[in-house]
Length: 256
Image (cartoon, rainbow, N blue to C red):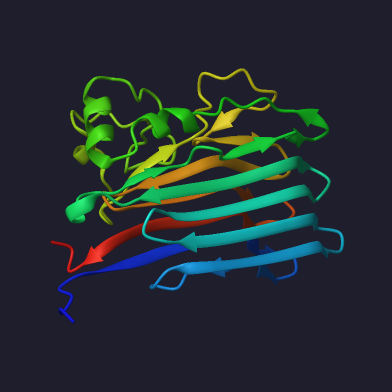
């Protein structure tokens, strides 16, 4: 039997919801429907039904699945029916990342296609968001995104590493990298969208409640991280909560 000089390391994880309330009464909300893939691949799944925190939030059903085989690594979070503080609700939320490794240890193709928020209501008003997951699906590798950015095909989707809301204006995509090495992006550009609430610092501000951030997407050469909905609370209640978060990649060891 010949000795192997390389092996593939799988990576995928996701969760439906988690958060922390800091005021007026501190509360840590347990992370729900959490699943993580073994480095050797395989399959995992976690489901929660009728989870709630009285007077704060409710999820009717949520499932996270992770799987990895020689063809691809995949993480999917699906939430059906949720309400937070009688302010933010949605019918269905999906966070989906698919990573297809390229031979020889080259950068992987990773896409968020299928990620969506459906039936979103804020203060009993429907909010229609412009989903750009298809744009990132068209450029699944980092090098493809670099080329698309240089050709101005990602306008409004790549964010400045130095602010929450500013669009990156560097001449190349590498110039948009933060100190941690990732490029910040969004699946839901808000600045040019007609919305029932003002856009402040890259999120939708709801007076007396907080700010909502949609489709926060972090990009590196070998990995992606996506959070479909993040709540940054203010006013009478302070804290933070996230719906539909996950990450996925996969690479050969040694990376070559």
